[in-house]
Image: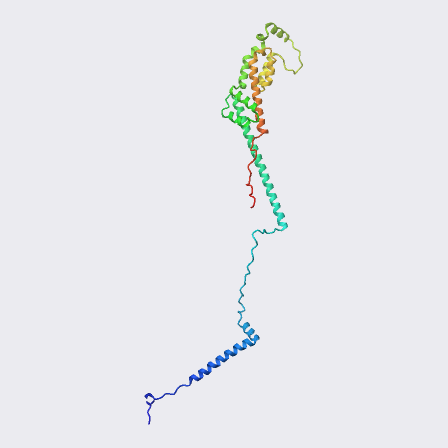
Length: 291
């Protein structure tokens, strides 16, 4: 009789039959794999069908391959369309026209400034001479501004300013000479003066004609002096009987007239011949040629 402890005494155990099944499965797997490889290599249609099934999903986007573009050579310039080239030429011409206008306005402004400067210098010289004052710094300005164009007028004005003759001086001198100018006794003698006086007792003249008597001529000369018409006042003084006594006065009056004529010449020169730059500076820098 055996008990339940016989198997625990070290008797032989039955060996499980798993190794045979495992070998059969491995052989079947390898055979299927070889069959699949042979089928894919032998049937192209099957290979294409498997490629379609294993392709990218419908929503996926295929990567875009960017082809490199060959850069144009550095020396090649882009060609412009004829219409664009004509438009650019028109704009360039318009800009050049505007620049020319600006240059003309700048030149005109410079000429006007030169005229104003010359007139101010001439007016300052006239004002100083009318007041009997020296020119001071104006003398150098006269030489610089008008010395080349009007040297004689400049020299005359400068000389007159050193020994000025004013209108007031001429009026006072005429008042001092009035008795000798109207009588003429000292210059022409008593007999000649008496004959002249007797001849002037009765004078026939047309209505509206000014009197030719010495007293009337002297009054007329004074009125002309008060109005600044020294040249016409000189004519009246020369017609007076005692004009020989007025030699110094007439010389001063002639100097006064020549000085004002020289000042007129300087003022006219300032207006007609403004001194400006020979070549005005360019408004824009000259373009450098392309290398």
